[in-house]
Image 1 (cartoon, rainbow, N blue to C red):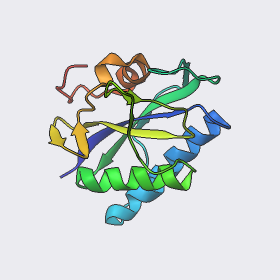
Image 2 (cartoon, rainbow, N blue to C red; image 1 turned 90 degrees about the vertical axis):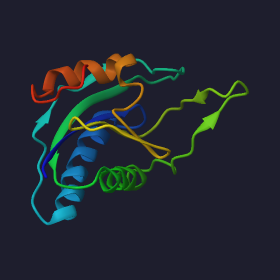
Image 3 (tube, helix red, strand yellow; image 1 turned 90 degrees about the horizontal axis):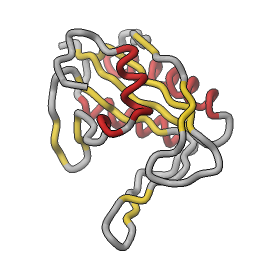
Image 4 (cartoon, rainbow, N blue to C red; image 1 turned 45 degrees about the vertical axis):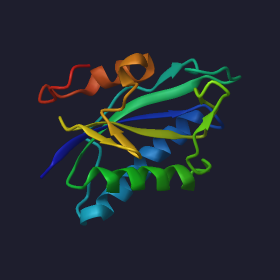
Amino acid sequence: MMVQVYFSLGSNLGDRRRNVLRAIRMMEDEFSLLDGVHRPPVAISKLIETEPWGFRAEQSFINCAVRFDLEAPCHDILECCQRIEKQLGRPEHEINLDSQGSRIYESRIIDIDIILYGNNTISEPDLMVPHPLFRQRPFVLDPLREIISPEISIEI
């Protein structure tokens, strides 16, 4: 079954715009390999510049939202995204916590988050969809509102 999958992408290291656009091209290639069918993005928001969220950094972020229509389990999509992040130079996903147990955010060459997987909810240790913090992040919400389909019933 085809599912509308929405992603948030961001970069604040190196050539930020190039990193985001390259990641989108790589997503197209990776997603096409999942089922052997060419899967171009259905919609890409404008690229916006935003301040880091949850930490301080010298460089601001370039962010956007992207929609792909895919016929793949969400875990397979997550693996593709993590593989792309690694290929672009992001270290392995490791969540660092401060002494109070709050997540420590850091600058990154690329960040690809699955925000929505159709109208589905997934709550597993390694995958939470809708993304649990997307409503608190203007850098996710603004681009997402630009491309969201009326078929999505999850409140944004």
